[in-house]
Length: 400
Length: 234
Figure 1 (cartoon, rainbow over the protein chains, first blue to last red):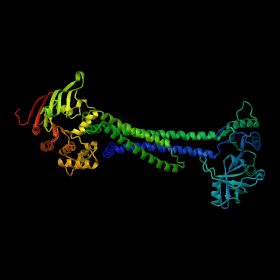
Figure 2: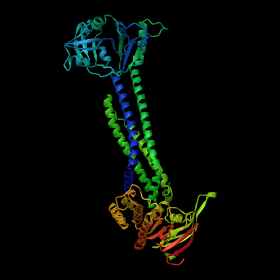
Figure 3: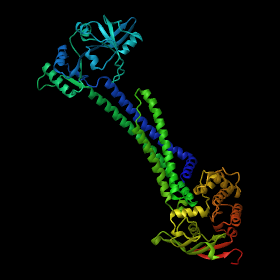
Figure 4: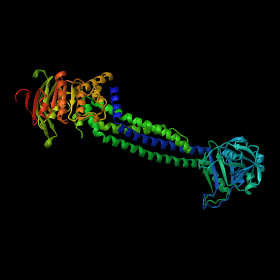
């Protein structure tokens, strides 16, 4: 009986090619849209959190002033003594890196490249999760004496040296020549979209003496020891810096401690909301597809009711008719769902490559939209048939 | 001959609607039909002839009365048992043909055999033979839309007789056809009655068609008005 019913269902699908095609199309578009949107959204979220974790997950950044941008009050910069104090008093701080950055033009032989120079110490590499691809980091003598040495990023190497090993060569920055002692491993784009590898790192003293001509430090990067509470370190930093900067009890901080975990959460929550939004829009298209299927099925209900009447008259059992319509509905919906998933997978992989985000297969959304589409097909394909099959054969035959 | 009746109806009534709007289409029908007979049921519109036919064909159920088919009380059968009775003993031809649209003649004729669970090879052979019997050899792969009314009715007849039913029920089989085609269809039906011994029950309001039958039953106002054998005097 099952085999015969299967045969009848397949004949019915073939017989109503247009109806079958439209049913499948509604499901295909809905399923493909939902899966593609959610998959790309997940990829974007993953990409943002990857970039942030490349910054170091337990990083604190300290800047003078409460706010950025226009209207930011001029607050006193940090000094080397602040770095020493933090290092001595806050034991949970694993690395304390002073940061002085400025834009410069680096020249090697006939090539030049506009980049930014960061003056810091070896803690900078630790706090920023930087690894060396070649060469070495600064020696204590170089840091103390402010020697003209630098560690360069992959993008700078690429622009000035091509594929050549830069270690041991000298590049010129402003008026002085600087020996390249190390090359950083590439990190790629930052979460904010800038190229993290477009950088030249020098000892703090070298930058202060030869480039800025002051003792000022723009900001501090502090990494917290594994297992230590970031909030506790933030609290200690606040107290210490308020004391060192002579801020009265009733005055606000004139500096700000930021936590990359907070930045990470803010950024990924944005893409997560975006994913949900896109998914919701796509879900509407799945719903519209469902309504399309409902329409097609309801429009054909008269024809189907008469067909059921004919089948009953020539001796089909009610359950045989129902099974046939159920198989038909399930086959169409599943086919639509499978084609939808295939299109979504292809589109997601292609678009993920285009958008430069990782492709992450999400079994949950695939299953969910597959079963949703199957449910739509079965409900709207099967229930009108069930009503018709329960009629007296003569009433089904005479259905207008 | 009443003792060997294939079909015996007694006191069959059928009421549509209820209360004030109730309409009694059959007001107590007693009818016995022997195997191999060819009965034409005639009567004006609203006389209940089609209602009686639908009850005879187990497509509809009577409000009261008893209907015996080969000694089985039909009114006591379940829905599924009535479907099986239709599958195994009855064949239908309707005024509106009632073929599956966009389905080839061959597949339409095969349909009852599929429900009977016939294997594919036997099914194809029987369906082709039935189409040949109704004069449609070569039209197997045409769909109803590509066939004339007469041809569609031939397909319907082939579908009805492909299972070699005990009874062929025909409800105004020539109602939608011109005179010439009607005669061809009636010749076919008579031949199946004569040669295969299939009992035929036919509803018609044309006396030319009733003339093909061996027995004519007249319905008026939900009752049997007259019942005579062709050739006897009225």
